[in-house]
Amino acid sequence: MAEAIQEHAPNPKTIAVVNQKGGVGKTTTTINLGIVTVAAGGTALVIDADPQRSATDAAALLKKGKHGLPCDFTTESDHQALRNLHRIRNYDRKYVDTPGSLENEGRVQAVLSNSDFVIIPFDLDTGSLKPTIRTADVAREVGVPFAILMTKVDSHPTRGPKLVVEARDAFKELGLPYFNVFTRNYTCYSDCVKNNTIITEWREGSAKTAVEELHRVHGAVELKLSRLPITERVGR
Image 1 (cartoon, one colour):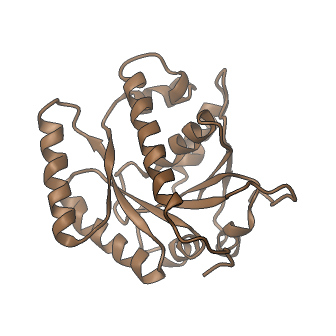
Image 2 (cartoon, rainbow, N blue to C red):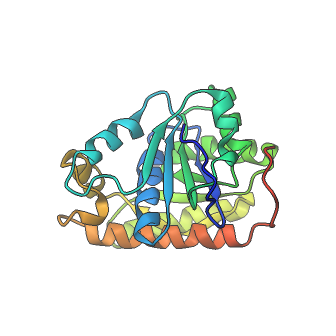
């Protein structure tokens, strides 16, 4: 785990990326939010708390590229270290990739209890709705603010937006907060990693549009954070 230093970031925040269901885009969201945070002029630390180590594998490939990985990265499984996330204050933002299952309750609880905000990725698959609701319930129990982020949206110009509207209606009915922005299901996300290139430097396929979407997500997250009550983090 990266150690805190004396020179603190002005407004450090920890954002956990959590969903009980795997394959919804947690790792892609986590790493790329770290990348676009730096592109937007901030500092970021990405923390892989998932036993599968997907983020760690992706980060290793990106670090080999010409531009490297602009955000700092660490892998952490120790529950006590995860409970001390709020003590790392030398980054503007800390993004935590979590297990694709709530069965590892101790690890997820350790992350949530020391996070300022939770992003719950949702891939518009009907099989993802119940796990997403359960994840939201856990965030509520811990008392950490959250919002659902629609990911892997069909890039078809009519089919994708139709599914987004249907998902928003379902979230409204359930009283679940969600982001108005979303990310689409572009192959450039996996292609750039395979080619050791961060998404902001990838020039093929739909990379330009993907980066624009990521910046919109980053902006939406920042807006949510700006509306949080101003409190001194001491752990939950």
